[in-house]
Image (tube, rainbow, N blue to C red; front, side, top):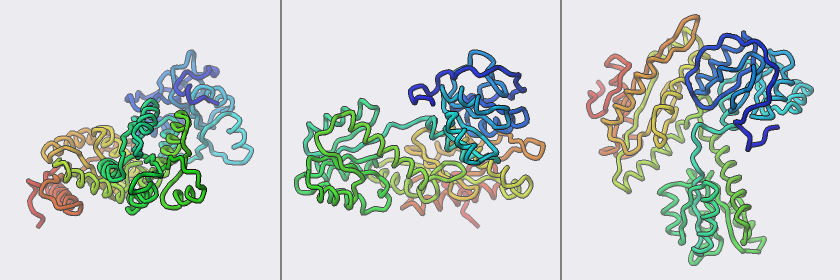
Length: 439
């Protein structure tokens, strides 16, 4: 099996074989080695391209000719002869996924012994492949974990904070419960590391205050305390704590525990909050984020814009080409939005073919320009469908936060602008400030 420290290094050299013709792919997320017979190669390569992963063009249908390039991951199909031999060689250098038509106990055991990380059954589920690739090699850009330390002992808090920062995490320190709550609401962290014993308000009470909102039930709270009372430790877990670490703790172990808890919480939140087809925020979580960002604008006087986006004539795509092609169009739009927007912007799937975007620190005029640029890019994307290239388009409506009283009003304003864009002929972006009132 590969070591996590070796992911991306050159794999061992399987035997060389002839390769099929390979369509050039745009540079994307990672370098994927794809190994399949000629019939299956093109289909798998198209799926990877739509997921914004690059297929390494030097690789052949069943082996590496010589001196393989560095791989982010390898995907092997059981359409090849002796796929387990190839997987054994590849898995020594990078994460390896086997796409197979078998699922017997004996087959799965052989896959384990060949070092395979994931076995995906045919017909391939593109979302499952995307989830596995993200799990094995990480997303395109990984944000550092955000940690909030709550401890009235500022010296101890500073020591722990430095250990976490040295591990690449972003850390804030609050020395009073009131300050902790203000910092928490201002920028919700990935994990709270909290002392149990503090003046006036103890850690359990503060944890219960955080847990009063369902929005924050999934944020892990780890208590860090010299408290030896086992009963009190259990109370801490019962009333909102996810773990209990006894002081003093060696910095390396603290980093390991915090990272493990943050990773697990992130995985659970992803399942709960993400759309299954695109990986974007689902409708409920998108609205939660909009509530949070509007509240922040209210505190600091900032401005944001919301864009509601809807694919044009999408029912016709489904009726003519089928739902599998329709799913590919939806994923293509999701990829266009996430790749073309800034890292700080927030994208969600709000319905079947409807998407929402929150553009932070952006007035409506600038938001319209940004979304219109993506609209033009999306129109140029061609997808294979029914022996021809299918092109699609979208319409969008944009509304700004200034003058809007809340989430429902800003979404309604963006929806009205979207309706106006559709009414005006589709394939365009309309600003709510300039959109005509609905008839």
